[in-house]
Image (tube, rainbow, N blue to C red; front, side, top):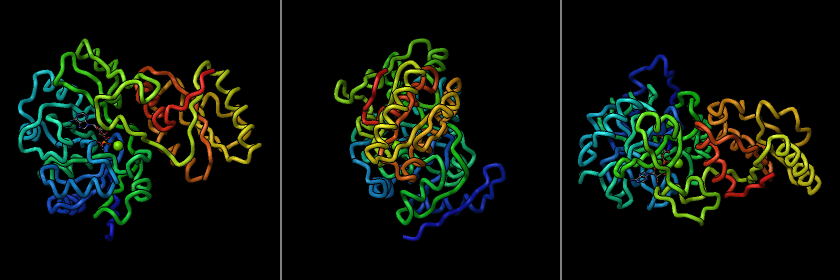
Length: 350
Ligand code: TXA
Ligand code: MG
């Protein structure tokens, strides 16, 4: 299949380009588009056949349900049995934005979207291109991250091109995704609501707004097998580059020492080393390919560079990636969740 690559300036959108994407979606094709979290791979959500193409293009397991994207709250009405009051308040506060709400599904949502569950995940992205594409197509759009299943999620169009070229009808290049990791998945069918996947909206923000918020124990667990996650997608090894990833966690000085020591050992064995460091520590490493993810005091900067950093080091051909752990506060919780999955829970504590 020939893939059309279309550059669109998010600050100066040409509606003709958007309409081309919208008509591909309406006709049952696939369009990858930028959102504020990561790039999404969109298909018409209520069309079983169109959604099936997402699973084939990504190589996604069929038991992993998709998020349905809307451009306004009205669109949610056809997707769910009812919008719980709390959900409506959360939409008013956090939409458009990186918060996905799990609600009871209506009968019009095909099983392929929900992987047979009786709930559906819905989100309204805070990105002018994503919103316009959904609005002009006039239908809810199912969109997982636009990567081959298991690979780090794409935060730039080049990442989508790497993974999905010739597998989709169109890829929209709309620049870098600002947040850099996925939306928070919040189950509002239970009380208190429960975070099934940490993401762009933080636990602290939700607690401040809602009061009590639970968090799926599997998110905080260190080993995959300990607890079964409630969100199907969270059970897969994920976000993985080709290289082995090892996280080094603990006091920052001790972390740096350990990484220096490990890097030296690997290089002696002839293994090329990549290091995911931070602004505060990057100068401390003298061997290996060093990438700073951002400022330790600002987890949002680290979030926006994590997936890109993993892909970058992969492209450099390193055999092992040594990554500094960061604090769990704010979006740091989501950063550490993704990092642990990328590492297959291979963590060295110092
Ligand atoms: O930021 C995002 O959410 C991005 C952008 C493109 O919007 N999308 C995204 O989709 O991350 P995906 O498919 O990569 O992740 C969806 C997650 C998976 O972990 C899936 O298991 C979970 O949401 N999910 C979807 N429907 C669910 C449901 N009914 N119950 C529980 N978890 C669900
Ligand atoms: Mg994904």
